[in-house]
Amino acid sequence: MQFDMRALPMATRYKIVNSTITPRPIAWITSMSPTGVVNAAPYSFFNCVGTEPPLVALGLLKDPATRGLKNTASNIISTGEFVVNLVCEADAERMNACSVDAPSDVSEIDYAGIETAPAQLVSPPLIASSPVSFECKKVAALDIGSFQTVVIGEIVMAHIQDAFITDRERVYFDIPAMKLIGRTHGSGWYVRNGDSFQMERPRYDPDWSERSA
Image (tube, rainbow, N blue to C red; front, side, top):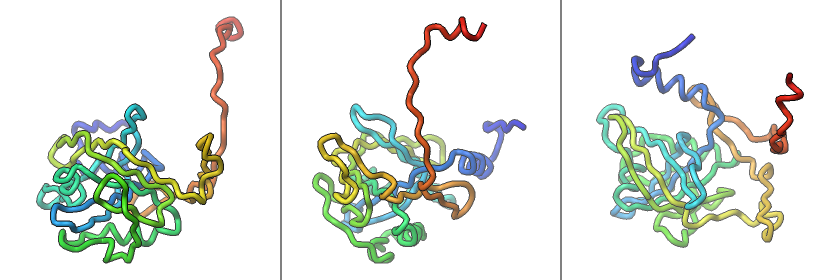
């Protein structure tokens, strides 16, 4: 069965993409309004898109009723700064609490009882319990369509909790110990990163055509 994405309503396109592109990492974004209100919100339309410079991409959906910017997008565009905090299993409930539609003058940090730590190069704080936090500065923000803003940010400072560093010189981390979670299909479904396997990257075999003949 094929789905012509050009002809489908937004809600149907969202369901197809959201249900099949899984698992997705969660960016628990902290940002700050021009008046100093700290916002914290989870987004799963997120990933890294480069390392020279190190870049992340965020897909920030707009308010479906007004088609206006939500707090996170508004803050990033206004200030040019944000922090991506990755989500561990122990933080799942607090992260989920931050998904509420809170008024712009209410900080989800206070609402969900989240402990923060100061960032080094940007104004928004880190979420203290996050295993990994990336301080980011906006490179570009693009309105593509009427319902979304795509933000590209450069990672200017990375924070990895000491407990998960196994070899600082070789930059080895204990990723399984972080117990990061991701988003999957539908409403409210998540995944643990507990089941993994490894494959070595193969070298090109110049004799492959002779063996397949």
